[in-house]
Amino acid sequence: MIIQRVLLNCINKDAKELVYLGDSKSDLGYDYPFFISENELISFETYFNVFNIGKYNKYTNLTHISLEILVKGNFKIELVKRNSDLSETVLFTKSKIFLSKDIIRLTVNFNEINVQEEDYLFMRISSISGFVEIYEGRWDSSINTINQVKIAVCICTYKREDYVLKTIRSICDSLFSNIDNYSNKISIIVSDNAGTLDCSEFSNYPVYIVKNKNFGGSGGFTRCLLEVCKSDFTHILMQDDDILLEPECLKRTLTLTELLKTEFQDVSIAGGMFTFETPFIQFEASALWKGKPVSLKHDLDMRYKDALIQNNRLEPADYSAWWYQCMSVKGIKDNYPIPFFIKCDDVEFGLRLHRTIIVMNGICVWHESFLKKSNPYIEYYSTRNALVTNSLCERTYSFEKAIIVEIQLFVRCLLKQKYSAAYFHMLALCDYKKGVNFFLNTNEEDLNNWLRSEDKRVKEIYTKSIEFNNELIINFENSEKKKNTEKSFISAIRVFLNFFHPFRLKYENKIIDISDEKMSNYIGCQSVIHYNSYDKSIYLTAIDKKYFWKILGLFIKEIIPIFILKNKYVADYRRNIGTITSQEFWERHLDI
Image 1 (cartoon, one colour):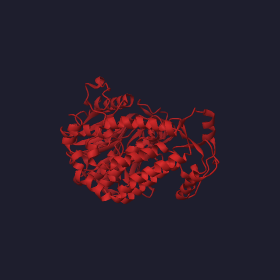
Image 2: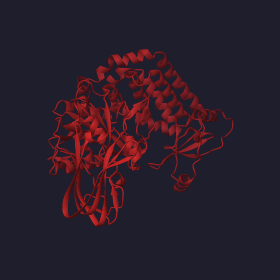
Image 3: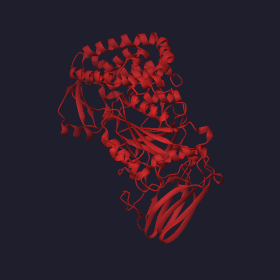
Image 4: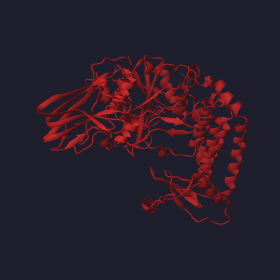
């Protein structure tokens, strides 16, 4: 049984160092063979090519593993175990001369070596003379499949045809069109919330398109869940539409679920998220919930062995995001997501299911940066849905602390002259207080359209569009950024004093990158140019004392009743949540 293939290429051409380290003459395309230059050493101690022996030892019934390489040339190969303390143990070293393609096979029995959960195996191969050509590599075992698994890869989309069609094509080409055909084990279901997706080219593959109401990610993924639960699928893999996927990740996810021990049948497998802009840096792989998301395994540079070990290290998580999450459908029927539209739907659902989460090197997606989706009205969803989530689950964070977090987030918006975002915080508090009945009686598409129009109206009042000055931005990006070690609450007090200053402040039209919004940047700012380095958008805001006090007063008016009557609101959500998470509700809601 093939457990994991050695990846000799990658769908993301900018991620070479996640595949191999060294000077190969290969162009990272899908053409074989993989060339190693004379006297060069190539290491496969990389994110995609380490074999996570510690994970397989803990979660599966695997007892031994063999590395099999189809290779040609005069070479030396080493099979190495990287230990949790970063030391290495060379398990095998062999030198061979193959004048034509031949196979070298190295086998490791788990019970003959000490294995910790963080440990992994990898190979190094070097040329002794001339070119060495690698045609194929794989980690395999004589073990048979333990669990009968059928996975539905579910994608929710709204007018992102380019991304979705590319993803489907790559899956079909890799999983449904070659000798290893997975069509009896993996299918694709797309919830098309816009009704514009043409997938006729995939008519001969297990690809199914479901036209759905535009009720956001919550509505789209729930529609997929409903389809999955009435079929013979054992697992659902929820996947964002604006991602780049290496198809090998699906094969590894399938194999892992097929080999899981009985006590781990209900785990969730979380894919790491990288961004297109920084394809080596992991943004997140699972997360905690502390009134707001706290990313785990954040900002790890996966080109380095210490990050690979850290990524394998067990860190108990509360949930994993839906950009790539695979889980058993057991226990989901009549226990569906809340109609949040967007934001916190994966958080609340993960907290409610409360499953063990596995993170493993080599399972991931590349995703658009969230800063490209930065709009003030998004604060409405983040705030409202976070409060609902905290009302339902105090296992990870108390509701009182969650209210304090919300106050902090609102104040930060206000102090940073983000008046529009602060306004949507206030609207969210108002709707949260309406309880479960608000969700029962709301058409999410209509609400979202209203929020977008309100966003445009508020922006026209409190922000000013300015012409993009390329020279100005270049000078800003090249300027030396001052380090500030001042505690954030001290900086917040100093920024608060901006709104009491009797004269014009020192800085006018100061450029601040929204990806680096430390509170200290706003000290002494009369006006700010907010710059998004991801989409190159800019807008101008200025001190507005009248609106500052007006929106602050409205916010206090909304937040005080929530704090005083918190038990009432929490009880309402806990008592009635089943009315908006049942199969009956969702089928009626989606007009199925």
